[in-house]
View 1 (tube, rainbow, N blue to C red):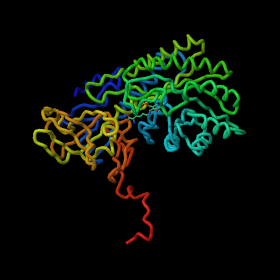
View 2: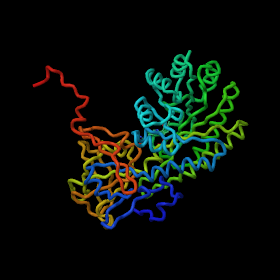
View 3: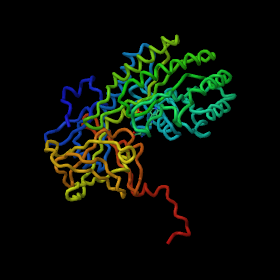
View 4: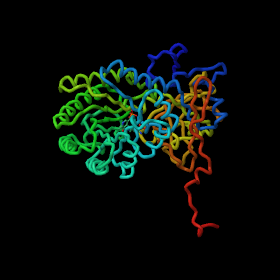
Length: 453
Ligand code: LLP
């Protein structure tokens, strides 16, 4: 694994999503991995393992690159919104918000988290294909934007908004019919998707909105999928959406915003080669500008919703190596003290990851091993057939690229407590998520009196 040099670390031009390790990663004099100025082995000793280690510099750099690239490449106004489903917690929401980003939420829980982190509802966008009545009431009460997914929701909102002083701000999510190459479970833009209005419903939605003055229509939203390396689908998306903006305008609807979703992929293993954040923004912007010119509509405020490419590369997970099993002639399993409960992506999507030994950074990677989790499930394998420097019990094994969809999808499977997370910067580590305790595991348990021994 090639680490960036010290001079590269400070260079803004490095796109975090193209790196395997956080931008501040380097090998220190003890031959240990250091991130954010903190020795990873020391962090594990202090905070325990598994441990999510989030590098503030990398996250801020990615946020700033998105924000500034839109200012460079898009001639109209823009707003980057962090898709907090990637990692929703107070510190991450507050941090990206301090870089000027808004927050995309998909549940009352994520909305509550963003609000408690101090994010203004002005820049919170509420998604979801089945928001409950109480979630919609909550959204209207706090005044965030609602991205409407279906007719039931549109009618519920229109009814709730009757007689309200503030007109709720709404966007309409459309399934654009754009195919892209990614795992089937994380594709959303193709027509056969549970999300959003089908294009053939849109004209009747515009008609409905033109008769519903109690709703303030802002514009359209689409998201075509996640972990995408191709640029063409996003360019096409700009064109398709701007055609629909022109149609909305023909219903007398004033269109001010266009949200092209997220989806930019990141490098998980050496062979991954995603475009940079700046390239993605440039293509997306060009698509929207060209589409607006062709359709004869004014440039809307351009919103984007990155999740993975913002927070994914900024975090590593550190584990302690435990047992080892060699099946002669077949493989050697090295087990770590976490697994599918802190990173369900390999078992869910067959996602590939890289690893290294943080306490022996300059060792020669000459032993092929398979990294297994500790869960009672044969499929709980984090990495298959990776070359490492003969991992031993007690070593600190680090998996990079775990900032997105790891903590947010973590579970207590096998009643394993969820790990702690620390935010590292300039040699300081701040706890941002406490490690769950055994008592936390029983917090929701109720033992009926008649079952007490
Ligand atoms: N906007 C909407 C409406 C979305 O549904 C998503 C992701 C995003 C934005 C952010 O996309 P990103 O920039 O992160 O690609 N759990 C899966 C990923 C599911 C993505 C869901 N939607 C995984 O671990 O790969």
